[in-house]
Image 1 (tube, rainbow, N blue to C red):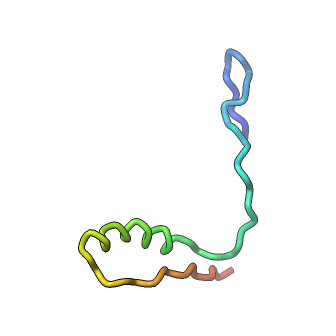
Image 2: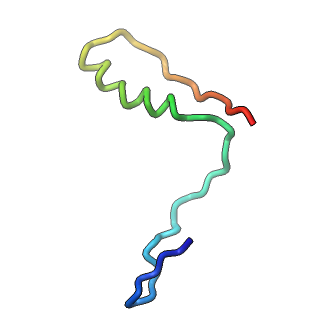
Length: 58
């Protein structure tokens, strides 16, 4: 879908980002873990290994 300016008729959406193929993994827990990493660092919690992405079921 392309959004165009009504006055200049130029595209308002830039499509210059790379489109990567779907790897079939759910990265949600990885992103949530990164959000909590700074809180663990502030409280000096012991090291926790990175969370690995889960395979999605189809």
